[in-house]
Length: 325
Image (cartoon, rainbow, N blue to C red; front, side, top):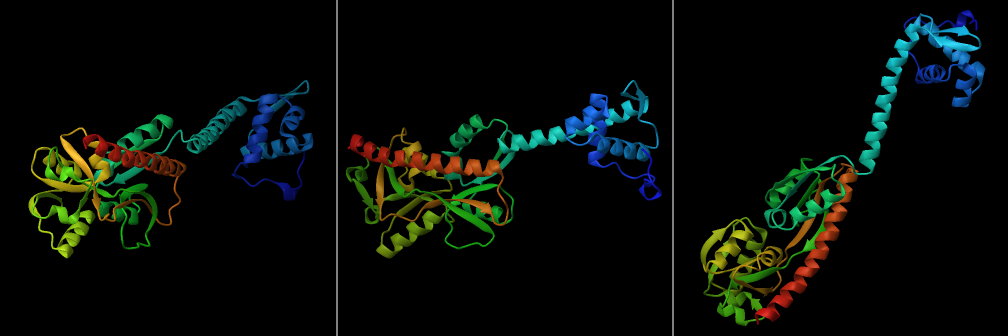
């Protein structure tokens, strides 16, 4: 086909994706007619595009032989490059499919110790068994650090104590309530009570959480308000450490019910504590950042599993009290 002067192709013009597609179809089918049928376009359109591609390449791509187009050696070299491009495109499609189907991806999770060292590992394990190609990084930090990292877009999912102050740099979603319980050594005089009141702690050796702990601050304020004088024997930064000290006979403590329940096989007894202190957990994410498919799926799995487990914890603590009583 001949082109008019205005149709002349500029030297070093780039190949268009459509021209490359038509060239590949002709290479595959051997004739412009079959290539046109495969692409659902007219045969003249294929011929025109092929001529444009030839002019851009500045070398002959095909020779005619008995109604077929025979590729030149240069055409075979070009086709090898085209196949690599097509394979790259297929690789992108596979990657998109894997991301959509949660067969790839990475999650950066940060959680407070009382959750990250207790229930969270089993939640991650169950999620990973369903989505083995999603890699997960877990960091255990204080709730304050969790919120700080979420506000700085340094994590995908954060789990911490519900902050009292609103932060415009984060998105928060309620996870679960975990009202504290009182933990005492087996046979301690408090074990005779069904529910431990703040006043019952007066004069007792007490193992306290660290001074920065939100529940510690609430409990200190409550005891001061009621004139309760505890003997603050030991201070520990982790609930698990407080419980271990109780099991060793160092005193009594008030900690989150999740940690207490998971330590129930130690020589301890667990009682509900009144009044309930405000101890809720939330899921944190950076504001203004669209969560990945993997992050959304993990968040739903996290919330569903946690709430179901905490329901069993509440029932278990009640049953344990009846058994110990």
